[in-house]
Amino acid sequence: MKIGVLLKQVPDSEARIKVKADGSGIETGDIKYVINPFDEYGVEEALKLKKAKGGEVVIFSFGPKKADEAIRGALAMGADRAVRVDGTGLEGSDNYAVARVLAAAVKAEGMDIVFAGKQAIDDDSAQVPQLVAEFLDWPEVGPVETFEMVDDTTIKVERAIGGGSKEVIQSALPAVVAAEKGLNSPRYASLPGIMKAKRKKIDVKTPDALGIPAAEMGAGAALVKVTKWSPPPVRAAGKVLKGELSETIPQLVKLLHEEAKVI
Image 1 (cartoon, rainbow, N blue to C red):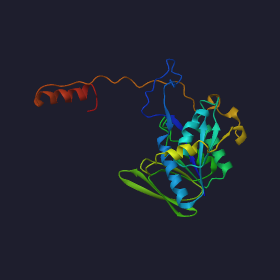
Image 2 (cartoon, rainbow, N blue to C red):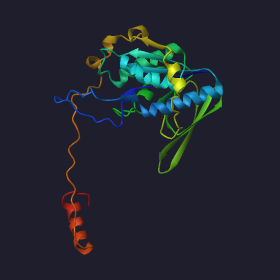
Image 3 (cartoon, one colour):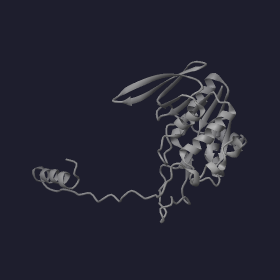
Image 4 (tube, helix red, strand yellow):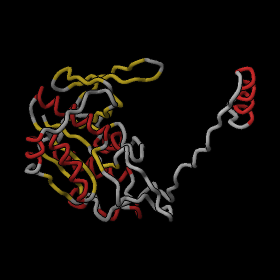
């Protein structure tokens, strides 16, 4: 079985994000980059499926040379090889363009199933898995909390739909599966795995080589453009009410009504 995983390199969730003075983006000099955490669940599920059914796990990513760091992390977990669509000079490509080239790469490799995280933690768009499936004309299911193979051509997944209810879906393969937190517990890369990852192949392809003109990517061709970045407003200092409950409760109610405007 040929099992693909969509992977994105994102800033560490603990990184301190600073917006550039001109609002054109974020300061990246001191930021540590990691595998998108939701994508790690996709990698783990792909490795579990490979153990059960055999085959290979291929990582697909779009980005510059720096993205190889995250890709090597997935290879160290146990993925067999990777395809990186080179995004050098194509900064500002929107999710539509990124999904388009990733779908082309997946199609070229003849995947049977593709896993992905339900969303990337940098832009939180939660669009790429669905768009990739649309370009491939495959079904997409997610965000999934359980996954199982019914037979060699059918999968069954479970996802939360609110209020504590779960939805059970069966789908034919090929399909795109978007992973939710809790689907599994991603493994840590072992030292032997890290050493082996250094020798595993990352096949770098250009959009043009995949039939997607580079001129149709990048900020200039984006259907959705980010016009400005701004930090969230500074949170106002809290207030401490002192005194007996009979005195402070009326004060609290008044503040919640007149200042916070929540009651």
